[in-house]
Length: 340
Image (cartoon, rainbow, N blue to C red):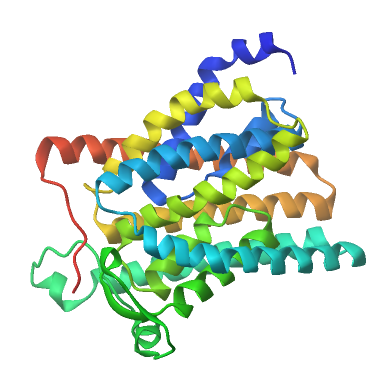
């Protein structure tokens, strides 16, 4: 791919970087399910699309993590514990993938599990939001931004398996260190098995599994993405599969977008963030399903439709985030997550 072509579409790359950076800072995700197919549509060979996206993900996640750290939304101690489990989980996930590759069923099995996970997770989070807004405390007019703690998280907090640790940033007074390590292992396994960064898995796992505030889950998830994307960038760059000029242009927009998305979380209720996230991954599931249907029915056009669908949804969600931030800055003080 020529440098002249990259320069000619630089404005589009900056805009694309802003879209993905905004969603990264707002949801705590890497955005690979948006960026990779988009770069492929723009003419990047798929391996260069993945490598360039990883380089962008590294830069944008650093920018977003710094922003969230300043807002007090990054639990570094929790992130380090999870990284230990993530390393083991990634190894297990890759081992299973190689086993499936040997049998010739890897692509179909992985994509089907990906679809089930995206739909299942999105529908559960929508259900959780509906339950939240129909609770009596809201009907009485109480202004509650977020819920912290679930039945699962409270059960895990009660487990006494030494050593026990404190995670004050996450609001956890006492928990077995093996719980965050285990969450990291499970999310790392799924990320490696599905071939994704894992942000869309890790953020809900932190909310529902560990019971931490939405904003802290987002910031800590981004902290984790720094390490996974750094490893991926190194591996692809060592093979010459990263277009550094394109990545730098994308990062111009992504850096600004990461700031916008990070600060927008201060002006959007935690439960509303979860709803937007659920809708985004639901349509991501529709996109993956269309792509798989195209493979089964030998209809290449469906893959193109799938890519444009997720690009459109991402753009609409970015616009919503920007509007929410502007309205928040103009009318109300920042909303902070609060335990109920």
